[in-house]
Image (cartoon, rainbow, N blue to C red; front, top):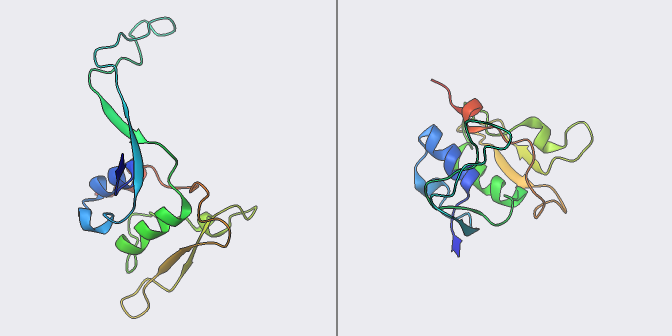
Length: 136
């Protein structure tokens, strides 16, 4: 099943109040995970962990640099007040980052995000957690 958005992108977008039009073109393949009502494992934690009362879906593959760059272009071309782009994505200390950013982020000179050469299909690194991205 292919749906046009990613879990990380959806969680981030929902946490930030970003409309669905911003990430609707990013295609992600999903798989169902489910055994509703499975028993929690109490072997290592007496309160139990791992029990899930509902079925859910998760991305079959990791979000790629190209997908995340597309998301960034849709939501933070003029202002990245929530820190969705980490400058380490542009290379980082060892050059492994996969997304470049150009522009100053103003209306006259918006930011443009792109997967770095030969890194578009690699998993995106250094994304913020939705908790750290939300600002009151």
